[in-house]
Image 1: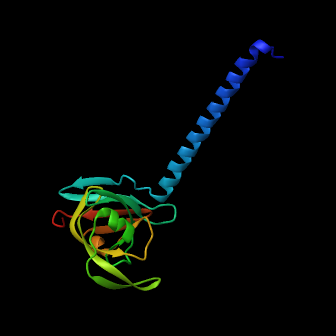
Image 2: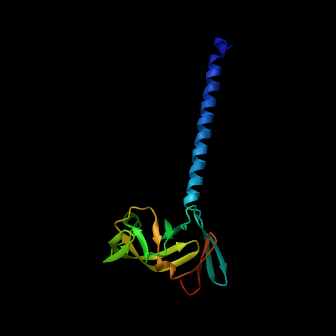
Image 3: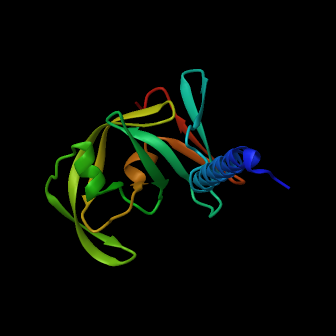
Length: 177
């Protein structure tokens, strides 16, 4: 049984216990967020290998079977989703605006959701791991509110790519910079 002179110590001990639980719950929430992010983008820092002048970047499928990777457009960090069905790199308008990309002439594109108008643009440099490509054709899509950029054939035709199991290798040959 506590006596009146021990009451402040009991309150202090109980307060410390509450603080400890809050810290533990905060750390668990943070760890769960990191785990979820890794499920979406297992390629936050893509692995690059160099051999005889070529660069290989190895990507892993996310839990839904897609290849999502971090990369750079004109030195700004972005998130790519590889899409072999897209003719070019397709950038949501909000992302294009934050990257400072200019809208060029309108283009008609047929998507899974029908025909849309997009705007031509040019990317000075696009990077995935140590693969760097200059002067990449792209389009700005005002109909997309996604936070990912579709990495289409305007990039993929400039690298060799092959899939083995749940791993995709992008290979840049020395003459394709």
